[in-house]
Length: 350
Ligand code: KG4
Ligand code: ZN
Image (cartoon, rainbow, N blue to C red; front, side, top):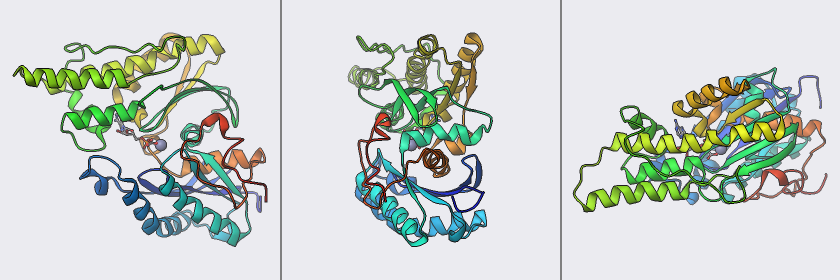
């Protein structure tokens, strides 16, 4: 570290947000700039990878400049650059990585590659400055659904993960079938508010032999089949009821894995993060569960639930503190797994 401020510039381009942020000592957010491409992708009903990459190229430098300006920090005052190396869209990831490498090389400061899921976990450390491991982390987003026991900074034991679709992906796909705009999660939640979650009951998944794993593709198919069958029979479909029934099934599946995880690990703190953590029904179900189990529950504010670079900078600070410095040959790893964070994507030491 150059100075005592431990300022990390974070860069995130794994999907459809171009983001940069400055964070001091891993916990103090000096700036967080997010340029969203949602409007661009909406007309296609989902993220178009090639368009995402091109938009990142256009936005990355202005977004980084803005993050430095809003923090009142010159590049010479930055101690390290942290960047998402995966999982994500390869072309999108490469834009952030190239920018991060260029800045680290030009400024002569370390580059730290961060796993995107690790970033989502650190959104809670950024938001709750007294939170420390061990903590159970449930990360639910458009690309991932992972239940992790975090034993120390950078030490992850994956207890369960989805076998197929991520929770947010299921929201997006079901919303699309219902004719709702992309991204489907917030639109489906709004629709569900006027529905009865008990009117249409969808199946809950159980993964044989892996009780803490998740599965959402059967649920998605059940909703799609329900809609198609009703249409074929000419039955009236109450979309708010369908949305509420689907949302209840997702929330049940996510909450049902928590109590066994608490018992298996003895960890009594739970940090929920990722885009789906913005969901009000999930939050209130988790609140009730935490009260029942007498565990502490943490969420980031809504602005830190969805993709941002402040969470990457925070994770990068702790990675750097643990000596995780990447070489300038670091590459994007589209399928990076959290438990491989130490082994993959870091390149050789400089
Ligand atoms: O974390 P995120 O911004 O990107 C990924 O890393 O995937 O999460 C985006 C996902 C999308 O699938 C979106 O539909 C979902 O989070 N999402 C929600 C809500 N807000 C965002 N899902 C359910 N309810 C919400 N309120
Ligand atoms: Zn994400």
